[in-house]
Image 1: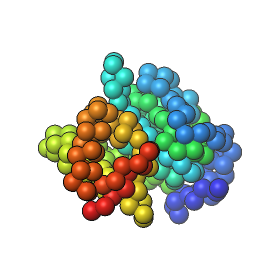
Image 2: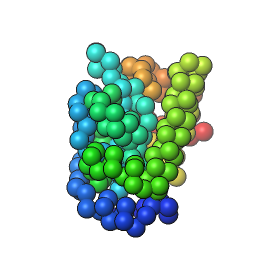
Image 3: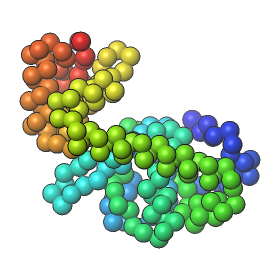
Length: 202
């Protein structure tokens, strides 16, 4: 699959990007762990990458998703400042990506206006994602957050292909809490539960 570049990318920049390393990996692959030094920055071609924060007990909180055509602004920022990763990057789907050399990224920031615009747009999008996350955690109870999450993730058939544990990790709570709330929603005939899948009814 070929990556669609932003229209403002300079031809020379695209040429340099396409000379970077290609990576294909399966769902569940950990691209980067918290505390690791960053030598390569992902630019997703297909699939999806999740950036999660972990506490000492292993409990996870989803910070944001990285979709095709996007990169990881936290990795870029950490790399430019010679800092280790502050989050863990995991593939939620089988994915293909270009791994940009961190030294080249620093050079592109200085050389290409198109790349600087790309980074600014990533900043804006991720800041918005994080503000929504803070709002959800601070002002909404878990019931409302779960219902909103299900409607956001449902496909055109009103199906959500997520396990209870994956939903719990995304919402920063325990699997048992999610399982209980989903069962309550099923009893109210709002959803139908099947193995590895949730179907919206209402």
